[in-house]
Amino acid sequence: MAIEDNPVSRAKYGEELRRRREALGLTQEELSELSIISRSQIAHIEAGRRRPDVDDARRLDKALDAGGFFERFLPALDGKLVAEHFEEALEFEGLATVIREYAPKLVPGILQTEAYAREVLGSGATPKSDEERDRLLATRLERARILDRFDSPVVWTMLDEAVLRRPIGGRAVMCQQLRHIVALGESRRIRVHVLPYETGYHSMLEGFVSLMWFDELPPIAYVEGLKSGRVWELPSVVRECQVAYDHALGDALSHRKSLALIRSVAEDYEHDAQ
Image (cartoon, rainbow, N blue to C red; front, side):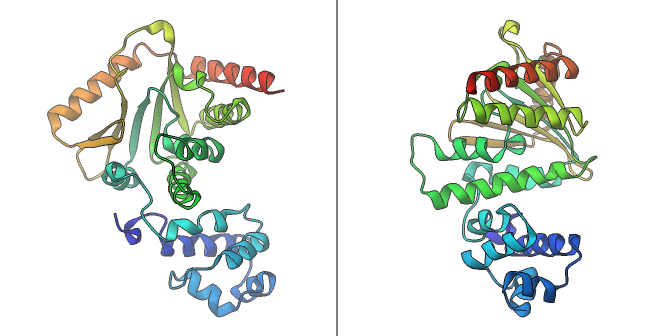
């Protein structure tokens, strides 16, 4: 996927700069004075015509109290942002009105905190440079912004209990990650269901699945394994995945009980980290 087709393009970067500036009631001239960047440069960045350098990005972060956003997302403007097998699924994800995911081992990408995602993307058998990891991280965090809208897409997440128990990044990182999921669930932004160990074998155990529905397209299923992934559009296969999901959902804990379990595991991580 070319960078201009990706959600984290120069245009999107510029839109985010303009959105944050206007949210603070600042004009381009006022931001220019605060950041010591020329007004014309800010205009070019907001229009997607210019790429800021690292120093400019840091000054924008400071002026807008952006928490490092503009520096952190800078590498996303320069190259491929996702694994090749996920490119097509990423496009569908941005259009979906309903997403139902099952995760057997890791927290799904759109729910990952920065610390958790950094650990996942920085680990593995094939070492990644800091620059490559940061490009991937920028995309993953940008994907999570679909949750900024309260009503669309509707997101259901089914997690195997193993997702909660594996301390990715250490106990402090896991505590933060699980509490993030609880917060999303308690705010009614997502529905969460945990498949406990005691369930034993279930219909979704073999791998990650994301089911997506759209306003103007037929539903699809994205299935992922080690270094591989496939988008299924064939109605019979999509329906088979949907049935498997529904079957496993019948074995899962309720939303309320799932949040209670996740909260309890987070508290255990917090206690162990102290």
